[in-house]
View 1 (cartoon, rainbow, N blue to C red):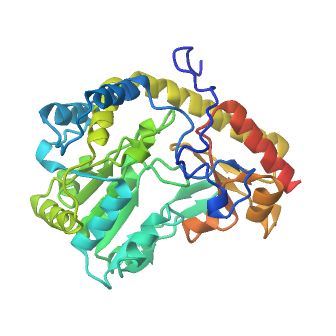
View 2 (cartoon, rainbow, N blue to C red):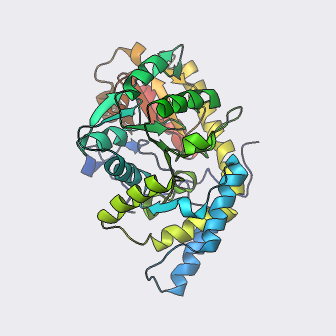
Length: 388
């Protein structure tokens, strides 16, 4: 069973003229009639517990400066303890407008211009931007790719960490869909500990993990790891709340937290978004049943993607997604140097070119499957028409 009548993930919703960057192709140089399946937000409404809470507060009508209260922290703490066995403390918490914002703050707070920062490409492209835009040195530990599965070159990882002042971890990994095993995370953590390199762990995808896989909070693996880790989380991916600009950042080490907050304040930031607080608390307090149904639906969409390419476009290899709602497609066998253009202009489909994710991304494409199944089928048909 992939869901119940209680939550209708098959309902199609018109998102044009709603300030959505996903549905604004012309301003981003794309044809007006493309089907957008690129940026990582979902075409599903947030759960009713969130929309009701936002409506209630909107009706209240006073939107002054706000701070999280004890009830907010209790709900957040309960979510992480219940789902991941991680006991977070109120004093660890910083609230930022987003995870990417937190990564930029952390890079500026804990490193200096010219310092090396390690990332594992192909990876979410703002990681590279955060390094380059702040004048730091990019050190790439390229993920290994063998027999359709990604892994870590630990010898190269240690060599890069030995020259670095920070490591930015993506866990679960966007775009390759790996949910790192505890053993892999532990090995990376021990290397970072050996060289006294702090870790910024982007764990925004932690709630999107499929059967037989488990997300391990990096900071929770060891007290030693917690002592040098900034963990960046948000309800935005899980409940489709990115536009509300709200992320929870956990920093157990008081000295790291002080440095982070000093840079946070230097950015001119102060109180968090009021509606971000309201939506986050409502989602974590009442949204878990909705999320469970969503994961079943997304697993069905992922199966559809695998079956489609196996049957209709067998030259494209789909990488088995352990987590996220992003399908990563190995298109090398198509031998098409103009693949992105063909998909966009011939297939009228807007998806992400793997090259933008850095080293190892060439000849790959990323497609967002968090949409009604009818929309997904149309997107896959358009892909086929473009390459055939």
